[in-house]
Image 1 (cartoon, rainbow, N blue to C red):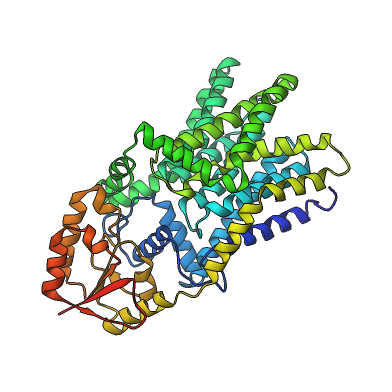
Image 2: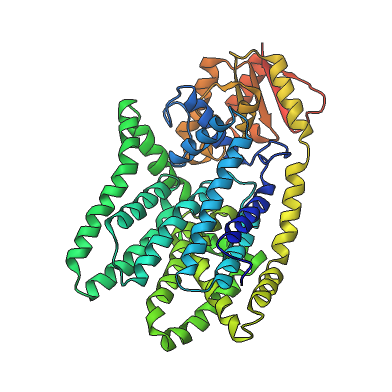
Length: 486
């Protein structure tokens, strides 16, 4: 495929990344709104920039790295949310480059390029407007995948720098969300079994040492930060204790999570693609023993990312399926490479037709997402105007529900470290008590209640609002009830 030279391939991949991220609300010319999770990350990042202590003074239950990434996005353009979009674009572009490089280790340029196109098409219906932990994970996963597959091709001869970088990427994934390490679990199992089988125990021990060094380089600075700010217990609670209760994993819930991930990838028929790969790979693993380990790794990586990355959450969220994306690169490239049997001359054309046909529904969904991103959020603008007109910049407010972006866009701070309450109050009743105490103590100037969210809180909240607050009306605001302190 001459046109896809080393000069044109990165340009095409970059343009495809831009296409994927046109669904982001932070893209240029978009409406500047956000998804629920993204709003939490952005407000948390801004609070940390204003000297609030992570977890102790501004709560969320994701890993600490996601807030640093959002801080970077806010710093780039001095608070303009397009800066977050730029960070997303850079992260996704790096991921696509390394996915392509990983595929090129074993397959030709055409199959490798279209396997990445297939992966990007699969990302479209999962991205949910972007700025998600799983989205940034793709960058670290792609780098680690390339380094691992390069060593696999060389009979698992790793340089120490490769082991170190793979471990750094693993730690970064863990600092985004702890169960995003499934891909590295598959790395460890395959490499360890091979090294033990080959009786290279010395190499295994040495590699293990560099693994711990790589992890420590990422994790220790966070531990030092929390220790210096007396927030170790808060960080442990947010990242481990709370998430254990949040997941509440059962066999049935885990299966629901796995099935939902597969269903979420249905717009590009990933389930069928992987089934075809399982069938064809068995045949070729027998015919081509030199790639047998590659196929075993690919199957293991897909299963583990589904089970650990999606099943252990025991929650139904489409974006969890992004954890599986690195595991479909090799299978997609393998199947596309086999299409060369149909015609060497028209291989690129066949690959293009196959990827486009299998992704038609994904493109239709992307069109809807882009339209939503461009749609003007009139009511949100009215809510922000209401907040600004009824408060000063030093006043505290509270948004009951889960829309932390309102704090950021209005330039106001939450009266409580629990700037959003759902699903937090459903997991831990102590959070409900602390949030109520914060409202009573800090007396927020405005309280905004989304929909029927007030009815989901204990009755003491309604009593407090009726006693100390007056409901105000504001033109154009229908989905929120707004209360001003007497």
